[in-house]
Image (cartoon, rainbow, N blue to C red; front, side, top):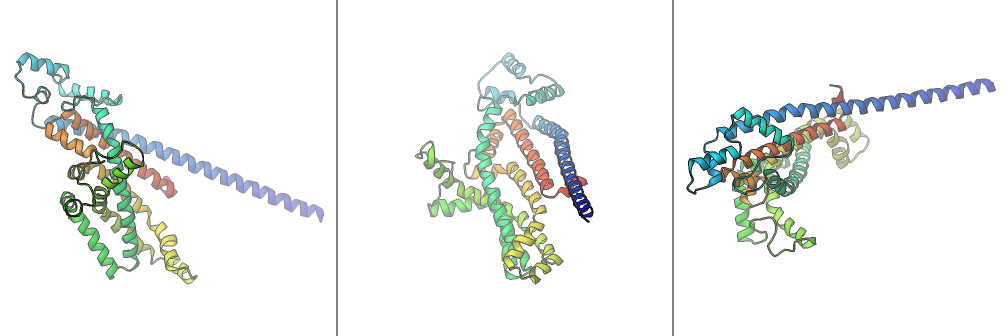
Length: 354
């Protein structure tokens, strides 16, 4: 009897060890698949970057105007001097040679020399990146919170008055051009009601650091981030609403309600986590789209970011700066998409097996 009991205990221990070893192998397998997925997504981005650089380079070269005259300005010059400038900046080389030279420079983070600002393009761009990221990040948070919140409310009772009101608000925010909405907001909240500053990122009277500086930046950030956030919440709202409508009629939701779960718990614990995956993809897409479309909002509000810099580069026909901005913004968009895919796979490991 004692031997039988001992044998049973040994058998249970062996079964436990086998199960633990199986779980460990399964975890290692998932980690390996995840690492392979991340590497594959990064490698897929490389040819996309080369193609984007080629397209941007071709478009810039096809634009009207001679960059040499942007360099020398309006002063009287001789043909010899023009030829010297053209040779100094490599503008006398064939276009394929210029493209290969530019690709080689990009590999070393050398994006050329700005004709207008008379300094390196890479340094000029990365001086403006924090301002753009602050504005776009805040707008993305606003659009995500509002979009998901309105989508949950609308999806709970489709075609009710809350759904109709949320739909009208979201569509109106998307339909109104952002530059017009920005000017309207400035007229009301900056000129008629002087609650917020008209333009810029920080007040001239604000201290250069500390809480006073942060408070001034946040005060300037309210209007442009709100306007841009409202403009971009529509896709998040629509996707959340549709997915919530799909999930709320599933059997497990009925089971949760039959067990006495409150409506708030049903919405935010049972339904929303199952509806959020496509919404994450839309949020990642929105971030890239915000970066690419920041010219209008930054110009209207005088925000010193990449969009404002692009506007100045277009006006000055500063082709190296313009091409550098296109390349950097394209890289950010690609990185945002890759990160979105990686986060998606982290939340839903089933994508690793496709």
